[in-house]
View (tube, rainbow, N blue to C red):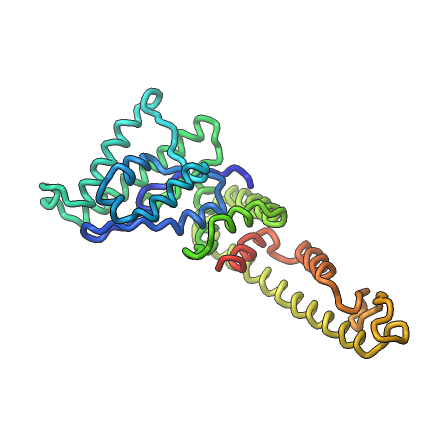
Length: 307
């Protein structure tokens, strides 16, 4: 896959109600279908060093530790020496933990307003890291935040398109193993479709269209592509059925499937009696190359696989 980097904020995987903290990694599975790496600022300080969070989420944090070991999830570089951001991040983390577990004195603040403020700070943190990573040469670094806490400027048009594409991808459920995600991502057909989608994202980003127009354009392409391929699959199945009927009628060399020679099907195609899976795959690939909206085929395929 192309090396897109996602920079998350802690709220993308953490939900809190009262003193109950729940870590949900399902969104990371979806991000892994699009991004090569996922970076979360102050990840260990936010989750692994807090006993309350750890005790409530042992299984999820064990899974997260495995993703850290594999390098799927990482913490961004420590910018403390070079950028002076480190202390700000640590202050943010300590505020986050105090808010979530009711440290004495915090109840004097309006909980709802404070939560909104913290989510805004989390968004700022993720977006600051993405800017710094781009400055360091990682030009394909994008903030993926829990809520649209801050409006995006025109200069972030590609990030806007990525947000819309991400929303069109499925969220794999808990029963989907990470191994299936990795295998799907490394599949040559998936990679080919992904590169086509990335080119489409680049083209649309250069147009600097409003958010709703990008959404409309994507929905239209998905609809065109799905309808075209649905018709083709029906036609392919009918051709296969016709071929089998002809074969079973004994019209091959005058004998019952004698020699399994090729014949001309009723639809005018050349096929073996059983219309092999390989032939159907080739026909499907050929049709995909002609399909309207083929640039977004990765989205459709991913939804068919994990939706």
